[in-house]
Image (tube, helix red, strand yellow):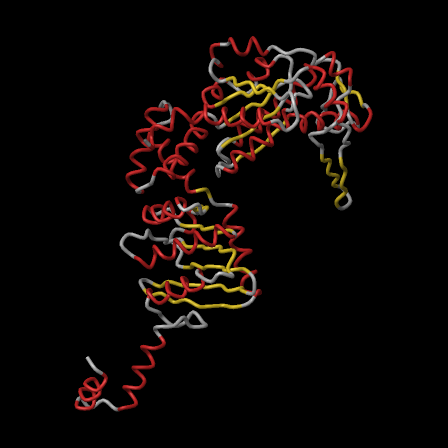
Length: 455
C-alpha cells in the first residue's frame, strides 16, 4: 500500500496528521538499536546490528554470552553471522557461551565446526540477558539484549568502560563453563551407562550426533573427549628421576588443551615437601618421619616407605577431584610402581592409563645435575607463608642411588589389570621430534576405539 493511500484512509477514518507522523516515527524507531534497554526492536534488525559489527574488519575479538543461541537452519542471516564470526576467529579470537537446550547445542556445534570455541553454562540457560563484546583496533562496542517473552530489547554501548565490565563478567562465566564437545561426550557416556564398553559409548555418540546434527569434524572432536572421559580420565606419568616426567606432563596437558580437553596436573612432590616441612619444624599433625634437609632447599629420605604418606595424600586428592576436569595428569616416581598405583584403588584401573617415560642413565644424570631451583617463599600477612616448589627441584644424589636406582616397570607391564594400559615414551633428547610423535601416538591409541562413532 502506498503512503498516499494510507493517508487518505487514515484521514477518512478521523485520524489526525499528527498521529500518522507519530506512527511513522515508531516504525523507524523499531528499525534501529536504541541506546537503552527500553524499546522493543524487531529481532531481524537486532541481528542486522550484530552482523554489521561482526563484519567490520577492525574487529579482532568477540566474546558472546548467548544462552538461547539458535542454529542457522534456513536463516541466511544467521548463516552470514556464523561466517563473519569465523572470519574474526581467523584473525583473532571468538569465544561463545551458550545454554544447554538442544537447539542451543545444535547451533553451538555449527560454530565449533567453523573452528570457534563454544562452552556451555547450564546456569545461564534460562537467562533473558545476552551480550556481544566486540574489540579491536579503534573499536570497543558492546551490544546488550534483554529479552522479555518474545520481545527483543537491545542496547548498543560504545566505549572501553562497558566493554571492560561485560568482558570481566564473561571471563568469570567462561571459566566456569564446559566445552561443548565435553558436554555432548558426557551425555553419551551417561546414556551408555557407567559399565559400558567403547562400542556402546560409540552407539550413544551416534545418537547424539543425529540429535545435534553434528558434522564429521565435530563428531571426531566429541569422540576424542569421550575417549578420555570414559577410559583415560586419570593418566599416571611415571619413570625414574631425570627421565622427563614433568616435561611430558606439561606437554601432554598442552596437547589435550589444544583439543579443548581440560586437564589438571598433580604431583606427589608437593605433598612430600609438605611432610618434610611439617617434620622439620615440628608442626601438627606430625609428618615427615625419616626426612633430612639437603642443599638448595631439598630433602632426602632413607627409605621409600617414608614417602608413602605423600602418595596417600596424592591419591586422596586425585580421587576427590575426578570429574572436576576431564583428565587428571598424575606424576610420581617410585621404584615399586605397581605397589604405588595400588594406593589409588582398584576402581581407577578401568579409567586410567600409564605413561612410562624412559631415558638412558647418562642423560638422566645430566638433567638432574641441571636441576637446582630452590622453593620460593612468600609471606602474606602475619601468619601465612606460602611455599612454591618447582618441577626443577634438586634431588640429592643419595636418593637417586638408594631409592630411585631401578623400578619394576616390567612387572607392571605383565600385570593383567594393567595390560594394554601402559604406554612407553622414550625421551632420550630434549625437544626431539620423536618425543612429540610418541605423544601423538598415545593420544591416537586412546581415541581409536571411539572414533568409529563419526564414520
